[in-house]
Image (cartoon, rainbow, N blue to C red):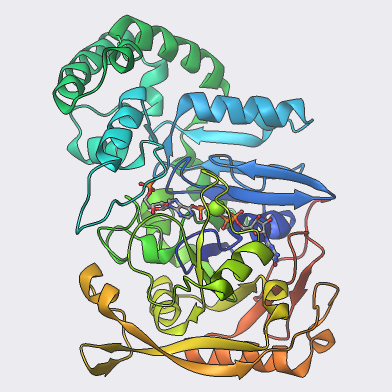
Length: 442
Ligand code: GDP
Ligand code: IMO
Ligand code: MG
C-alpha cells in the first residue's frame, strides 16, 4: 500500500471526515489536495466534535503528518482561525501540518465576488455556493495574472504585488456593484498589512509539499488522500454548472497533490445509504415530502459549513455507479445506515426515464438531469436500530440485503459500513479494503 484515496461519490457531505480520521492512524501522511473552506468535515472523537474546513482530518492523531497540497485554495484568515481553535483544544497543529507554497490563496476580494455572483442565476437557478470565494479564486488561478499563492506571502516583492492586485480588484468589484463598505475591506494597504501578518504566522508550516510527497512515496510511506466535496460536484464531470470549481472526483487526486496515479492502490468511494445535496442544481431522487424531512431530521442533515438544510432523497445507483467508475472506486464505504433504520419501505433509483426513454446513465446536461424521472426498485425496510452493530452479521437480514443490492447496482463491493458519527460505529466487512496496520496511537 502507498496511496489510498477517500472520495465522496455523491454531492458532498458523505462523511469523508469521519472515515479519514478513522483510517489516519494506519497512514504516515494525510493529504488534502483540492477544494477549500467550502468543505466542512466532521470528526467525532469521544464526545468531542471537530468541524474541519481546510485542515486535513488526520490532524487529531499524534505522529501523522498532514499536508495541504497545491490544488487546495486557502483562505489565510480561515486557516489561522482553524489552527487557533484546534490549538486551544490541545491539538498541536503547527507541528503536524505542512502547507504547499504552490497552493493559491482565497483573498478577501474573492469572497466579495462570490457573494455578488451568487445572487445571479444560471439556467434559471442560483448555484448556491458556500460564499467561501472558491470559484473566483480558482478562476484567478487559471487566469494567472491576478493570482496570489501561499509562497507570495513570504516573498520579497509581496507588498508590491498585493497592492497591484488589490487596486485592480477594487476597480473591478466597484463595477460589479460592491458597496463602499465592502471596498474598504480590500483597500490595498490594509490587505498588504494583513498578508504580512498571515505570512509571519504561516511561514513555519510552508514548504514544498510536492517534493515531500514524492520522497515519501519512493520511501514506501503510506499516504491517505482526503477528497473534499463529492464527485457529482466535479467541475468537469459533475452536474455542471451546479458544481464546485475543482476536480472533486477521483481524477483530481494526482493533479492536486502532485502524486502520480502509479502510487495509488485503492480508492474508497464514500456514499450515504441515501442521497443529499446542498445548494442548487438537479437532484433526481430528491424527496420534497415528509419522507425527505424525516431523513433530514434523523440524519441531522444541515450543512457543516453554512448550516443550510440539506436536500434529501433516496439512494441514486445510476449516479453513484457513474461516479464510482469515474473515481476508480475499488471499495465502497456506506455511511448513515442507522438513519435508514426507521422506514417501512426503502427505494433505490436504478434508471431514469428521460423524455419517455429509459436510460441508465447520468446525462451531461443539467437541464436533462432535471427532466430525469427516477425509476425505483423498492425494498422492505429493516425498521430496527443498527447503531450498536459491531459486525455485519449483527445487521438484520433486510439491512444486509439492502447493502447487497447497492453492491449489485453500483458494481463495487461495500468494504466499510457506518452506523453512527463516532469512530467506534464503523464496521469493516469481509470485503474491507487492504489497509496498512495502525502505526500510531489514536
Ligand atoms: P463530510 O463533508 O463528507 O466530511 O461530511 P460532513 O461532516 O459534512 O457530514 C456528515 C455528518 O454525518 C457529520 O455530522 C457526521 O458526524 C455524521 N456522520 C458520519 N457518519 C455517520 C453515520 O454513520 N450515521 C450518522 N447518523 N451520522 C454520521
Ligand atoms: P464537503 O467537503 C456539500 C456545494 C455548494 C454549491 C456548490 C458550489 O463538506 O463534502 P462552492 O462554494 O464550492 O463554489 O459551491 O457546491 N458544495 C458542497 N456541498 N459538501 C461540500 O463539501 C461542498 N462544497 C461545496 O453547496 O452547491
Ligand atoms: Mg461536509
